[in-house]
Length: 223
Image (cartoon, rainbow, N blue to C red; front, side):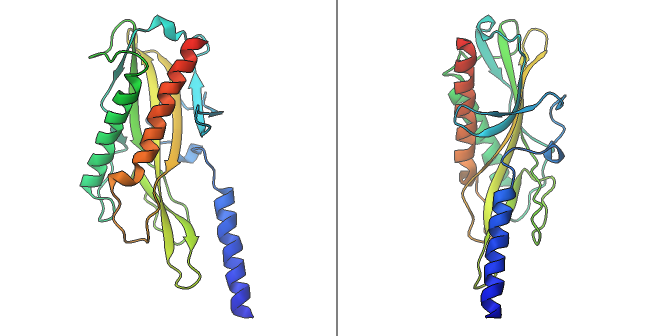
């Protein structure tokens, strides 16, 4: 009887943690990559994801004819670990670059550099902290492993891969910030807390970010 009660309480606790977890990036998770976070407001992306976003109310996308995508980066710079090796970090960053170029090329021509009539996209994969009890926080690693469930038989935790990004968009003529977005997403679950993560585990997250960005461009051009 006692065992059953303990199992029930554990299940309720794990459900509660999942239900209370915020889908938007919280202020204590901001990396410092953006110059100003004060204007960010909760919003929905074209796919329905919850994000923190700000767009200059005077923005007219029809004034721009091309987009320049700066090489993406990690911010702050992470240290590889046995669970998140250098090969995974490089793979994630390379794929983010490719996805942004692939999707934004559908919005407008890609430019070779900033200049008049060009939007500059400056994006980073940023740190996400895990605050789940019993798990080591990866404060300055861009991927955090968050407890998704607890096995009542063995106590082994399944792991979720969570990726965060911050991006700002600038006028290529004067470097004025015209929009900003902060968001995060969940990739493929890992079997346990020893499985090595691969870039492919979060490709679906990055694809969603890039596709939403393209759709956002289309919406803003129609306004």
